[in-house]
Amino acid sequence: MISLAVLSCALAAPAAGAAISWNAAYFNDAGLSAGDYGKFQSTINTALNYYSTKFQSPNAVTVNIEFHAGTTGLGTTNSYSNTITYAAYRSALASTGTSANDATVLSTLPGTAANPVNGNTDMDLSLPLLRALGFSEGNLAVPWDASVDLNVGLMTLDRSGAMIPGSYDLLQVTYHELNEVMGFLTALNGVPNSPVTVPSGPIQTADLFRFSAPGVRTFTSDPNQPAYFSINNGVTLLANYNVSDGGDRQDFNGSPSPSVQDAFSTPDIRLNNGLAEETFLDAIGYNVAPSAVPEPSTFAMLGLGGVFLVIARRRRGNQ
Image 1 (cartoon, helix red, strand yellow):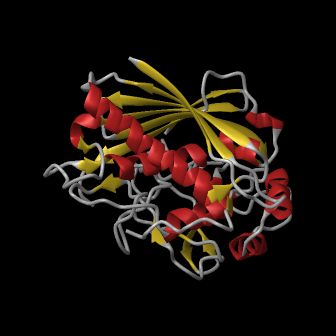
Image 2: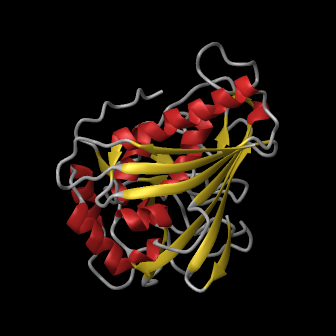
Image 3: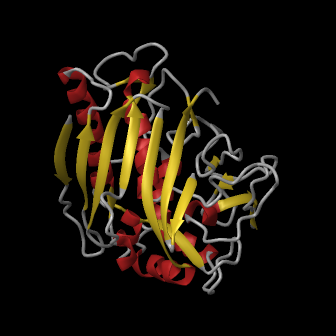
C-alpha cells in the first residue's frame, strides 16, 4: 500500500529564510492495520512539521522522501549525495548564516581550498542541503532524495499513551533518520576499525566538527580515539561521537546523556531533538526560524562519479 502526501509549512520568514517542504510517500510494507498505519503516518507528519517549523532554508527546498513501515533493523536511511568544493561550501555558509552559531562556525573554518580535516578540496553533501544552500549539484535526476525504513514491529507508533514495554519510540527514531536526510553525515562510515584509516576522499559535514581536544581535530577509524561534537574549535563539548564501526560515526554515543542521535537507541524512552542536534543543523547550513518554538529537550557508499548513495543504519540496543 502506498500513500502520497505533500507537506508544505509556509513560514512568516524574513528574506534570509525560506520554507522547508516535504514531498512524502508512505509504504505499508509491514502490513499494518488501517488504524496503526494511520498512526505511523501521523507520527511521521509530526516530525516533518517540526523541521518545517523549527528551521528555515536559505533557499526554498522541497525534500522528496519515502517512508516504509518495515520489518528489519530499527531505522535505515538510504540517501543520495553529491560533491562540491570545500571553498564553495564555506562561502555559502558565510553568505547565508544568520545566527551566533553560524559566526562561530565560520571562525573555525579556514578560507582555504583544502578542508581543515584531511586536506581534500571537496565535500560530499546531502541533496536537500545542497539545494538549501543554492547549489545546482543538489538537482539530480533521482527518484527520491532519501528512503527511510522504520521497523514498526519494534516500536510504539504514537505518543497518545504509554509505551509498549521494551519498544522504541517511532517519533524519536524518525527524528534520527531525518537528521541524516538533512545532512547529518560523516565520511568515516563504512571504514573498518582495523586497520586504522584516515580517509583521504571528500569529507562530510560532521567531519568539520569532530574534535579530540580543544583545537585538535580528529578524523580516524581508530575506535580508541575519542571524538566529540563541537562548533567552537573543540572548546565546548556538545556530545560524544560513536567511534566504532558497529554504528554510524556521525552518531553520538549516549554521553553525556541519551539523545535522539545516539548510534544505539534505548527502549522505553521518548526523546526529541535536543541542543546538540539543533545546533548541528544550524551549523551545517540551515537557519533556526525566528518564530520557532523550541522542542522540549527530552555507510556504505556506492560511488558514480561525484554522486553517492549513502546508507545509514540505525541499530537497536542499549548504550
